[in-house]
Image 1 (cartoon, rainbow, N blue to C red):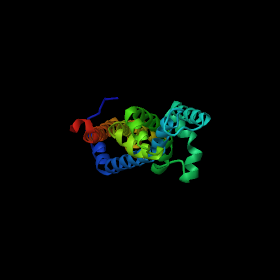
Image 2 (image 1 turned 180 degrees about the vertical axis):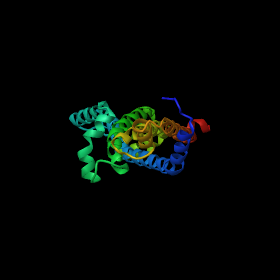
Image 3 (image 1 turned 135 degrees about the horizontal axis):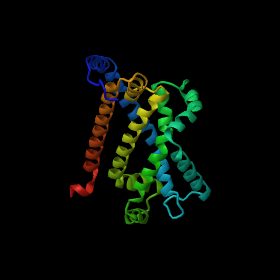
Image 4 (image 1 turned 90 degrees about the vertical axis):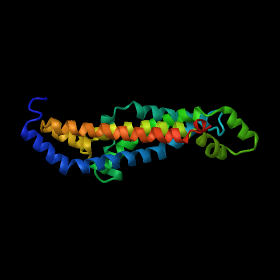
Length: 234
């Protein structure tokens, strides 16, 4: 694999790809990752909150069969390997996007794979909220909606940001895998050049850039989580 890695021809080809395809690949990876994470949060966060507040002793109980159904769906989607899920999502991609290949089409399976994961992370964050704070809000006559929006979510913001950081780095890894079905970005470049054309130097460069993006997302997320933690400001 590493034989002839730094030969003149290999270096020249890597430089051409670095100048022509890599910049757009970085943008596509960033675009897909951020948009997929945002859409997954829109779906997964309310589900995570509902799994906690909808319990029998929660602030807004819902029928047990509904809660059990949500848990089954979330567990089912989380248990499907992403490569298989991408193939299973083809009909949904065709329905929503009009095609099963390309950068925009890869967003659909990424969201489907990510929102159950985010729901579980959000559920864990909600369970970390001090029950005494919730009881105090209830004793003052706060409605369930007020408790959720003004107590539970604000109190769990640092944990939610930390979990969102975990989610976005996970989705970044998934986005690289979507290159197998024609999704754009660094993953597609790594697969096209490293797997199909045996130009491993290009693949290594793409992998290094993916690692750099993970580090950037992780650093920003950690800084935001620390900055939003009221306990550290006392």
